[in-house]
Image (cartoon, rainbow, N blue to C red; front, top):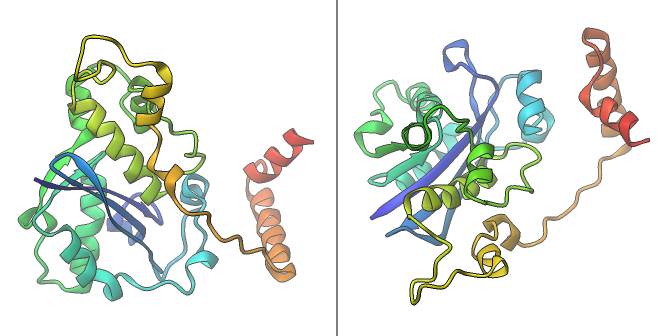
Length: 240
């Protein structure tokens, strides 16, 4: 059984208002085992990103200026997911955006539901835990999944965390060893729950230029004038 755990980040909340996908992250499960097969891409949406969305995922228009368009990656993306069961938290949101992008690329494009099965882990969680919070952070806490790296939303990181969470949700009791009746130590359990993101190679650090820093400060000035102050400057003040 091939499953693809998928997440997206977008310029806003509604594709009907012209919002676009700016990041896609996928990890593959084969027979409920994680493989090293992943799909990850940032996309140039050819439109501005809502300020509220930037506060959620931290992706800016400047970061996407040199990235490919959806039309440039659509064939590879569809090939990667075709025939799999897509595991998505709040699936209508992501599927709605993906189908919107497919139709923009080709009005005759088939909807994702015609070539993939869809499993919505939000609906699954609501059935398993009625009346409780069932967002991804709440589920991580409930199933003892380390999401400490999730300071901001990110499609690939969220897909990796969701994969672990989904396996914990659907795998029954996980703290008992399969070969006996004794309970695992906390350290053994934490080793098994180590987030996939921890195994990534170190990321290259690109320092902002003086011009970029100046443009950033000008952007914060504009936000300050339009609101009660940017969250970045509030954080800086708290750390002083």
